Length: 129
Image (cartoon, one colour):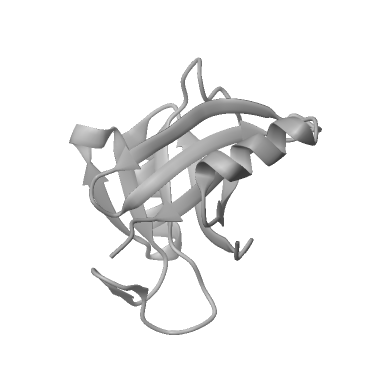
């Protein structure tokens, strides 16, 4: 398990307003994925297949605040070898599973939990192959 922070996510109430704010303020390139209810936020030079094309930054995403994800703060996403194993460790350590492993197209899988302090944290497992 790498345990590295590889992504961030920012919740929003108004997607158009949030995308415009970050694009105008920081020059981020936004790629809405309406079929997934998600927006990819590219914060620097990015190759569409491999991600950031220079060291020192990560990209992120944005999604609508909801009953399942009501947070008012951004969350980080941690790379793991197995979301199922990581979520089991989270529960053993006193955290709470928010979502089980979910496929993200053919790219990989995600899952969410809250830590012992109530912070929402995402997990990422890359697809094999």
